[in-house]
Length: 87
Image 1 (cartoon, rainbow, N blue to C red):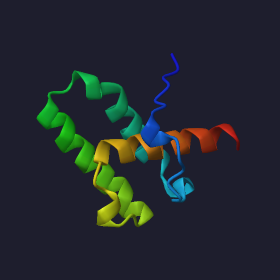
Image 2: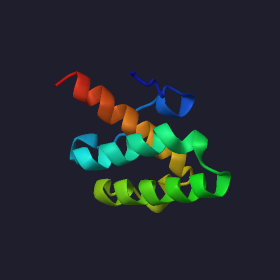
Image 3: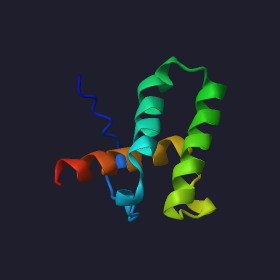
């Protein structure tokens, strides 16, 4: 089943080159997004930070733009998914 993660945080493009995200990193983001509702709040927040940190390091996203890790992961995953649809 196709999952639609559209939210306000995912509306505007990030400006980062999501083409640099490796397929396995996209899978990591997707896995987190699909499981996040089943996680306790503290585990969810910690995992969001860990995933965001990994992806942000590869895309050179500065710390000040990582303030909402879960929203960042969601936005980047949406952009990656949308980019893949138009290839």
